Length: 104
Image (tube, rainbow, N blue to C red):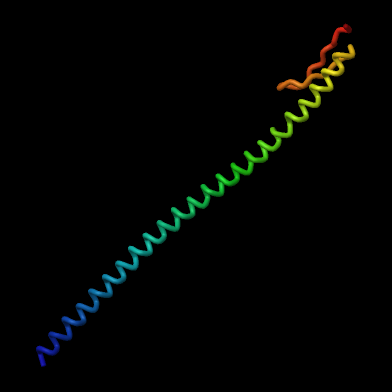
């Protein structure tokens, strides 16, 4: 009977040890999973920021791409005005400059 009790105590101790090990592994896995989720969240935030920057750059590029066409038309009109001897408006990078053309 004593041997049976001793074996039961050994099994109980082994079961408790296995439960502690499982809880420890679960806690470690949860910590690792949380850390990985945090890393993933930071990567998502960084990617969203990059996407926003690309979108902003695309809009800026589209605006710049359209701006030279306006400047070219304005410069062409300024050239016509200068040839006719009237005051010409020319576009510059800093704003509008007005110059008087001489009559030829």
